[in-house]
Image (cartoon, rainbow, N blue to C red; front, side, top):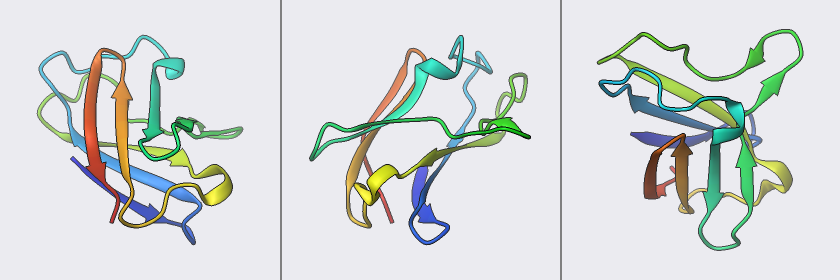
Amino acid sequence: MGCFLTARENIISISFRINRKGCTARGPHEIYALDEATGVKFPVLGLPKLGKMATPRGRRGQYGYIQIANIGHVVSRGSKINVVIGDFEAKKVAVV
């Protein structure tokens, strides 16, 4: 799993390897990042014409991505975030 800022630090891009289940979240409300320093919760980015910016199910063993809006530029390089995708949680993921 990796995490970096993009689009002038407006978007948090998270990459990950898809587990055996292929999809662990039942909906976009179960996909978010949590800034450890402030406790601010960031939902998965949704674009009107493209829908939710998350990898579709059924791609086990491949790498996927999620894009999350960095609302208020709370997250910066060097921040630690917790990434939640349904029942999976990765803690203390460094933002580069």
